[in-house]
Length: 458
Ligand code: ADP
Ligand code: NG1
Image (cartoon, rainbow, N blue to C red; front, side):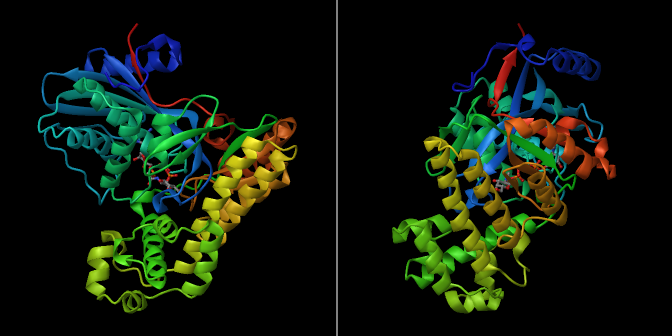
């Protein structure tokens, strides 16, 4: 059994209606009954955007929406995947021949990422077969980590079928690494919170080594998620990987400027650690070392003393080889200032001054501005939604997750919640044809939920 991951909770304990439907559908698809179930939650990141892959801490919490998989191990080596949502076609493969097609991020590839992560970790050449029925209710491509929830769920399914055990931290690290098989160069925030989340508390997630610390959110405020209804699939576009590469190049140029061994530096946090200075001081280093005008690949090469070929093969990822310009000054400014905001957010939650909600709101507003102007990962709909949320009572509002679409998260005083929801609903959703999606996919208050779980039949 997967030690560290709570198991053996009775199936009846959670969402009986959903489980019953899943069981019935499993039976009609596979002609048998599931032997166990795994759930892994999505998350909302309260602050700390696009900094996990730079080595910096982030501050997410799990949401109640999750991926739920009903599983039956089988004696053949055949893996059969079905989905309760007909948008996601069935998929069958030999469990001993896992191939992940990076060119098309089909849904089953996320499952295969989780499976492959466990397979590689234990060095297994033969995997048992299984029948799986997936039921997810996290709005997809909306910044709430539906993809990672699927990868984590599949990792835990595979581990459970194998009868092996791992800690939650090991599982999170394996799944963070294996989700990169889909082609995105993400950090580890989503997989970490999916495993390490605990009901009732947000978490500060720190990396190298991975650890999670409780952050108690203020009473009297509610965090509300609003979906811009613009979907953005990270793996189908290169926006995300370009940002990862811009941060990597900025780290290398800053390291070179400070006469550090730049070729060994990959992340902006490593530059700060090697210099032993504060985040505020790093913001001053940027002013001296980088210019606001975008850098051409040739200029980067001249500065680092390498050839274009070396830049492409040794530093850039396959999908970012032909990027004509890199904005290094802006990206580094966002990362160091956002990393500082995460620490301030945690400190305010701990000290809980009288104006806590206002202070947290201000940090969230600053974060959105930095995402919009420095990191350029917002979009007109997100900016409009953030403005509407602030207008109707949010103390702060920002995009959450990768951006370029997806959701906002707002901090709203509890006594303003119902008027806030009614007004945002009317102005952003009802006045357009965005009103059709179910509430839990669109506009809803959320509180910190629990992490991944295995359920067995009672
Ligand atoms: P997110 O920000 O939600 O992680 P991504 O664009 O990275 O967004 O991943 C979304 C992808 O995850 C979808 O295109 C789909 O392949 C997969 N996915 C999301 N929800 C489901 C689901 N219910 N069933 C199967 N696959 C899903
Ligand atoms: P989402 O919101 O799931 O697309 C992505 C990355 C995170 C993090 C955020 C931005 C993956 C799996 N997830 O999240 O690691 O970098 O963007 O803060 O790559």
